[in-house]
Image 1 (cartoon, rainbow, N blue to C red):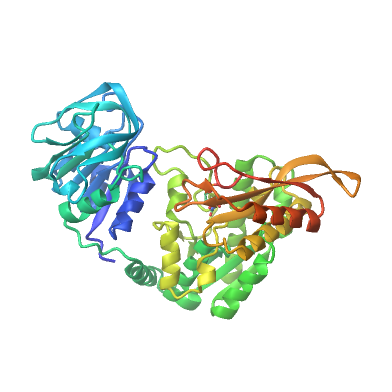
Image 2 (image 1 turned 60 degrees about the vertical axis):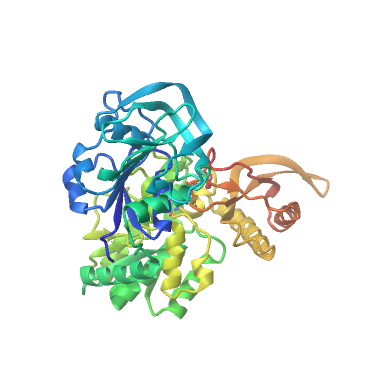
Length: 511
Ligand code: XMP
């Protein structure tokens, strides 16, 4: 990969940081998000061709608020500060930031002035604001390029030094023409050519892995989901038979999944494929455990143990390959953002790991980029377009204690839901859909008899990045059919609910 065009996004703890990264990559420019605490020496080593400061919840004048090394402004590369990042830039370069008498939140009218940053952007416009502080005085050498009623320096620049600041969030859709601004920053100001695409990512990644791993052996944790499947095929292209894929049937898979994964990898690819049946082991470890984070940790750790054991059988294995993707990395707490869930494929490794190193070839890709990588690798569409399935599997869709009985009920209900979504041709427009078995029983009546059985919840969301999501507006007829079929075909269920919460405030998975 040509790494010359590389945008470093310094994370000051804002909620939209991943969106900024996505916007940059959508413009075919490679970028990475790193915490603001990254030492300047390391930043210099990374040799970014531009830097973006994200927003963040703090006030720059508070003691202990996140700061950066002032030498970043002298690196001779364009710097764009967004919201807190803009205030920080102004503050560190000698400007003044104060608490605003009128905070701005939401869609705000703004007037832009002429600047390459606003090329082809409508001058009287709407932007998305979320701030309490404002820049009351700009540093020397800066000019105002945008104003709102309450914000005299809503945007500013020092064109000579290629330093740009905007108080608003250009990365969210509510800012009109925000993507034009990102485009302008990258192409008018940074003068990039835009050389980041999947074909060269895949090619360079294969070459890199070939060189790094050489004749050594690697084990790939294959779950059958999109990420680990793409990962396995990528690794297979790089090191062929030196890769062994281990597919753990932990008993937390969907109906028919273990069989279809095995079929796909053994029939379509000539991959060393080992299936390990450890259903009982997982179930006994999960016995009596109800706390979601504890369940996640147990499943994650058992996974690693199984690999250690299999690795020993195979002989010397140097690398463990995992299909971790970028949102997992960021959601598991890269910077200051709160940890919501510990994703089982990130961190949480037991102390005694027998591998030399963990390799995560997709660590820097967003979900849609992983799918595009799969297509680039020539993988079948139906495999690449599978909906995401979490590492801890049905373990986090059985609420409360995980038992064989609840798993069986869930598997049958989930299969019906998936089948009907496909029948209704909604499987591409709904990004994730599944059933959850709640830990609740309620009273019903069936054939004149009182029943006291489980409640199944249906969850379906539309989303582009899985960081935020809307509940899917599934037609009533489809929901009706699913509910009827589940009640009729699955024993021990007498009530079906449809989850109509978005993310936030809910998350996609229930645990
Ligand atoms: P949440 O529930 O956090 O889910 O809104 C966001 C997306 O991540 C998936 N997910 C996981 N994927 N390991 C994974 O590989 C995990 O531990 C995990 N937990 C959640 C979830 O299915 C959704 O697509």
